[in-house]
Amino acid sequence: MKSICLYCGSSNDVEPKYLELAKKLGATLAEQNYRLVYGGGSVGLMGAAATAAHEAGGKVLGIMPRFLLTKERIFDSVEHRIVETMHERKQMMFDESDGFIVLPGGIGTLEEAVEMLSWARLGLHCKPMAFLDEGQFWDPFFELMGHIVTGKFTPTEFLELFAHTKSPMDAIEALEIRFKQV
Image (tube, rainbow, N blue to C red; front, side, top):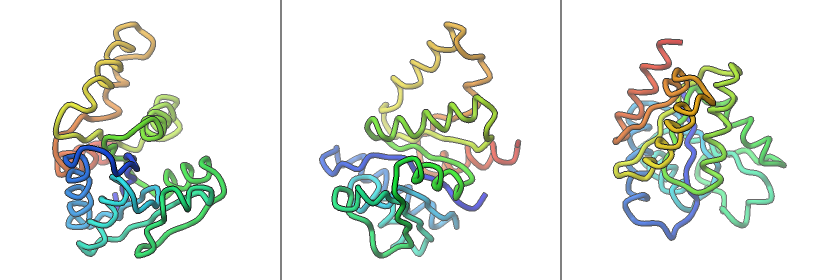
């Protein structure tokens, strides 16, 4: 495993603890010699993680659709690719990554993570995923996933496709363990 895709929020208006977690993750990825693949922006958790990874000497690849260039402001200090659509962005992020970490974020973050889980459930890939929060941000998501399994809409094994982690190293270790199993 060499590259880890990050899904996370692009808002600067979030609680500082989320931005700090993104910084910790970015620095930890760099220290562990993982390339960070992310949405390309210089704002919010995206920008915090990419800046921290870059400043720690890590490799970073940002992928941004042209229409978001003014909204998410590309982080010019790292390698980046401009694509035309969100579909191209998501596909390229998938293609360039060996696993996924999901930090707190909004509907876009959730959509990206759920799409990757859906692809895994359909057998289209076996790349590992970890949700990372140091609080309880993702607890409602995990409650919903349990509800879906309890309702027999998906098998119990589905819950093995992703981990709920509490620190950057826990997230990386969860991905490494799963990556070795496939």
